[in-house]
Image (cartoon, rainbow, N blue to C red; front, side, top):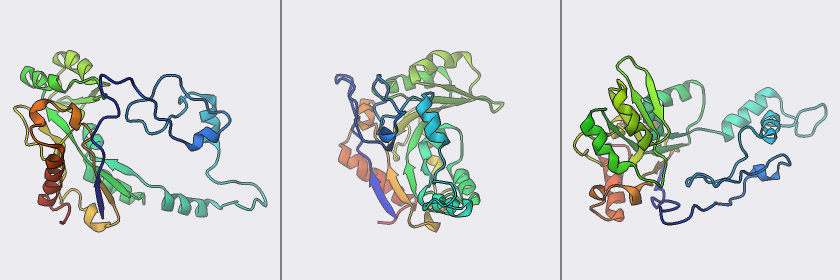
Length: 258
């Protein structure tokens, strides 16, 4: 099992111009692909054509392997499926799953049932609270301009409400009947909570993520990339000590061994 951390430094800061990360993509070789003029999201690793661009439709309609009588690379459906299942898999982000009010362990069970490999799991935690005035006020320091922080809220009837970013959610949540609010803001795994704010790290435990012990080849990644935009009260130590604390938290949860 391989465990690593990703660089928590944002790809841009409020004082820096948004930069385009011109990384090569296989799509650049497609004749119909054109790149958008607007800059990508700061976390984007490649620049992709707009989803409605006709070149995208032509690309997605192409079969994964060549077909046709006598083609030297022609694959039967069963062989193609075997190759796809061998080479393609799911990267499960526990923060994203929790944001959708999904159980990461249940997601893993469904992937196993369908025979879908999970070669990588991003161990991360989202903010979790209720919609009381005190809770919404406690969330305001997390409404920073560098990253988008999608918000999901669940009502007592089970309905899921959503907003693309935290400021919009803070403005509209008081008029809803939401009982629980989750924010796509990666907080350190060892975050103990602050007032009404908690994290979804409680969803990460050996009983729920027993998949990790059954597949030792799974690549684990600590993904607290928001270090530089955390409120000052959560950055009272150095980044090195915070990373070490996250490793220690995973060890205490018996998710990794030293």
